[in-house]
Amino acid sequence: MENIDALKDEVAGAIDGAADLNALENIRIAELGKSGRITSLMKSLGQMAPEERKEAGQRFNALKNTVAKLIDARKIVLEEAGIDARLIEEKIDVTLPARPEIQGAIHPISQTIDEVISIFGEMGFRVAEGPDIEEDWYNFTALNIPLDHPARQEHDTFYLNAEKDGQRMVLRTHTSPVQIRTMQVQEPPIRIIVPGRTYRCDHDATHSPMFHQVEGLVIDKSTHMGHLKGCLIEFCRAFFGVDDLRVRFRPSYFPFTEPSAEVDIGCSFEGGTLKIGHGDDWLEILGSGMVNPKVLENCGLDPTVYQGFAFGVGIERIAMLKYGIPDLRTFYDSDLRWLRHYGFQSLDVPSMVGRSSLGGAS
Image (tube, rainbow, N blue to C red):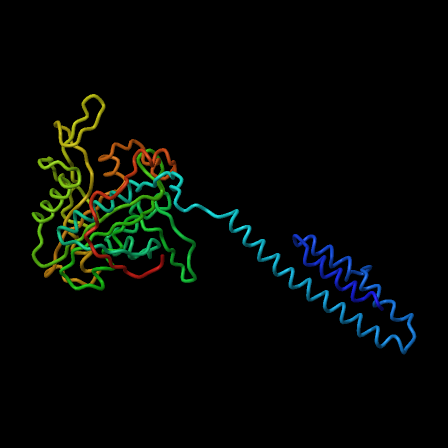
């Protein structure tokens, strides 16, 4: 009993001198563990006479509680010291220059879309958007495409599984359905362009199962073929950067326009190199025409009052021509070397057109 105070002083000194958490844990085990000295004292109470046990138990419990509190207090001090040491050892000198990183690049498709939007934006067009997954009516029927047209066949078009009513949704084959949706909900005058993804069953050096188009639509009471020609001539010259670029309109056929025209631009193939704006050759780049009266009727517009024109161009196609990209498939290879070569560090022309969205499945 006389040695309890000495034991308390001894243990307190050892705790105060513990240099780290491991040393402190060893002291706790040595004193309060299953075989520790203070634990052994507690176990010895059963061998004492009843009159001694009460006083000894009080003193043993007091010793145990004191040691436990001293250990807890020392543990807090050591943990805080450890944190302070880590902060000193692991600190970062924020004044050092950042490690060099490879700068990203803008994809040619994104660059081309922005350029097209900017050019037509200056002509008063706005951007309209719609769903990639379309109903057959919007993608074909409303556009005067007959049931036996090859574009409706599965070898040309991606169809989804039939719904409960037997209807089969389709991955849109062009962005023309957005034109239909716009004419249904907006009173003329209408002046929109529709950039977006389209899908067809084709894959080679000049075709991809998924590609991008931008289509345009103008509807009012007085628009005529001359307006169509002036709009597209201005676009071609602005996009390719050739002020005197020759542009030719060649008669063609599309179910949704009448009359229809393919648009060719002047070029040269001398020496196996394509040069736009030079030489006596021609290169087709887009389709166009006056909106078929049947399409206007399908959208609830009176063709005796309203008329307009429409056009469509492949984004990848004009990007390949302008930037000398030989294979369309490389647009989707995710090759960083290709992107560093053909990519852009900043957009040359900022977008100047607001956006709108037409609802539907997507």
